Length: 123
Image (tube, rainbow, N blue to C red; front, side, top):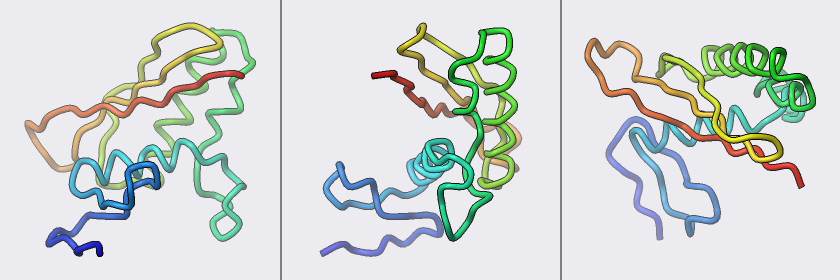
């Protein structure tokens, strides 16, 4: 039995975590992951939901980096109003690349900067 937390921001955790809940920063992090792992047009009830950053996967680096950065920031600004993106960084090389979104809670003057990592692995 799952107990509903006493917090405004929570959701069910992804299935691999055993059906628990996530709250607070973990809730926001999971929301960012859901946004960025959803291609625009694939959610039939919300066709505008998601991001187009995956459209840049097979482009040259000088097109990939600014294109992905723009699409990631735009998607988060559109769908996750609780955060402000500080920057987007990249580590690794194709076919294994990690995009890191550095963000903080909106409205915090001197808040911590959090990170969400999105792994891209071509199989």
